[in-house]
Image 1 (cartoon, rainbow, N blue to C red):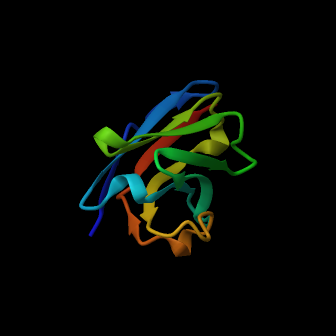
Image 2 (image 1 turned 60 degrees about the horizontal axis):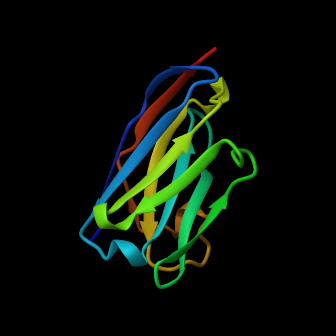
Image 3 (image 1 turned 180 degrees about the vertical axis):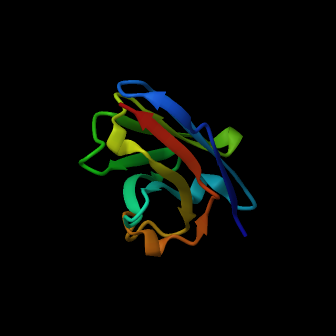
Length: 127
């Protein structure tokens, strides 16, 4: 059983930056596929980025085109923590942001393929 907890959301002005954190417990963190998703009111849950393990301590980062170049993911295995750094934020980035985890790397961009989810953290970007 894996438990996830997001933090770091808040209210920022357009063009600003935020760093979200996802703390994991209850699993072998280094082997987990870790993903970030967001969901705005009235919209479906949207894939943002994921981290998959290639082998050993080598990981690959995958990004949705809409956030590529603005958002960056990283993981600190010794702390069991997964990060999302967001720059050049826009009002359309306003949403609840969720951390997710699963054991298999297949279908990493599909929300329905993930087994574990955090409670979400709200990000609001003012114009």
